Amino acid sequence: MIDTKRRNTALLVAGCFFMENLDGTIVTTAAPRMGAALGVAPTAIGLVVTAYLVTLAVLIPLSGWLTARFGARRVFLTAIAVFTVASLGCALSTSLGELVALRVLQGAGGAMMVPVGRLMVVSGADKPDIPRLVSYVVWPALLAPVLAPLAGGLLTTYASWHWMFLVNLPLGALAFAIAWRLVDAPAEGPDAAVPRLDRWGVVLTSTGLGALTWTAHLLSEPGTDLVPALVAGGVAVLLLAVAARHLLRTAEPLIDLRTLRVATFRASVSGGSLFWIVVAAVPFLLPLLFQEVFGWSAVESGAMVLFVFVGNIAIKPATTFLLNRYGFRPLLVVATLGVGATTALCAFLTAATPLALVVVLTVISGAARSLGLTCYQVIAFADVPQERMRHANTLQSTAQQAAAGLGVAAAAVALRAGGPLGDLLPGRTTPATAYAVAFCLLALVSLGALAGALRLHPTAGDAVRRPAPRPAGRRDLERA
Image (cartoon, rainbow, N blue to C red; front, side, top):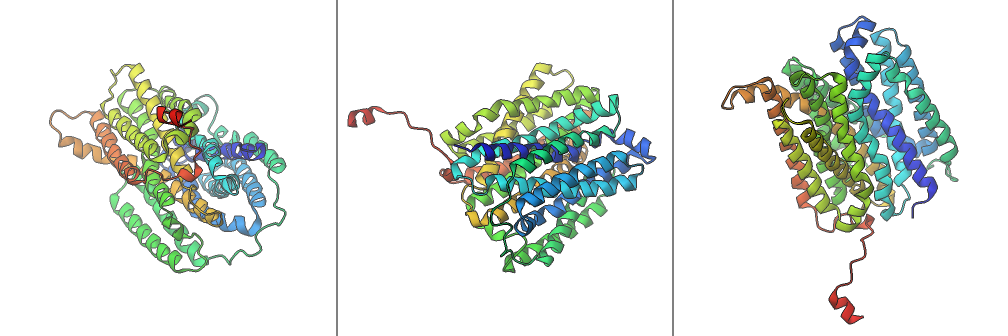
């Protein structure tokens, strides 16, 4: 049985997770109005999104060391305060430079807030309690990307772009007050034996992740020349390769890559990253399809995508029961197949498709997303020893953030490739052809996650399961 304080801490971290993810994408729909207000082109507002995502990617690896050095409570409270104050600064910005600088500060708070909070939730918890605790934390990651297009459209249509940041003030203040009362400082204080900061690890990992996120930004920008993106991508791969070599050869690395030797954790990082890319890409593509091809308004398309969240919520109460009853391998196979199939079916949507069918498709997609992400998040900590939990949490958070950022880039690249590939198909090409090809390409990415799920051992992750009692069979009754 989960104690009340740990459950409430998980719910608090869930709220923080919602704020962080919402702010990563809500700005996109407000680009035209923000650009007009700040006196810049709408395309320049992409820097506001990129600055935030780059900061998250760069600073998340530091969260584990800071927690060990200064204590989880101090870092968590500071992160909430920084995020909230930076949100106010974003709302008060009068130029693009000010806004970008404050988005960097906001990203610094977000980079510490969620990884440290999640570490507080899972560290020291009984293994069988982890599935339910993680399910509390995961749902905001599913809700925020779905809600962002609608929320951004409503706020910019009926209020102003400033409210996209001002809504964080009451949420942040409430989170800080609850955390102050709920999160206790450990009796022994911060870890006195924490090793010195791996500075080379910080430099190599942060610059590599920053270059990777910048590459994703360049690829997601329409009409961008591919040469700078390829150069940035090559630099990112080189830096991350050197960083991996350094982290594996260092006695006290910033992130311990040796944790990947744990099979279930490795499956969570590899298969989960591919799964995250598709999960992040579809809510980006669907509103574009609805608006650019079907001619729907931003509010109408955002409202339709909300049905993805209906699927998330519908499956959530049953997730822990399903894990205990069937185990990780069957559920991950079902989830990856579900996401792949629903993504491929999106290729066949037209303006004449009955709304009821679109709703059913998005609800099923949402349920598969929720089931898969919960399984990947839980299995990450199933077999990791307690002394390695900090490194596992940091590495998993870093991989998740990188994959989420790459999801939008993957959607943009798939859409860009959809045009030329669509011209090769027989028949007359239409504006919808590029989207159809893009959805099919993303469905192929989900096959990589499916292959990883099929390779899992049938008993993988059983350490965190509470198997349901097997019904007594005839032979059992005869023995009784």
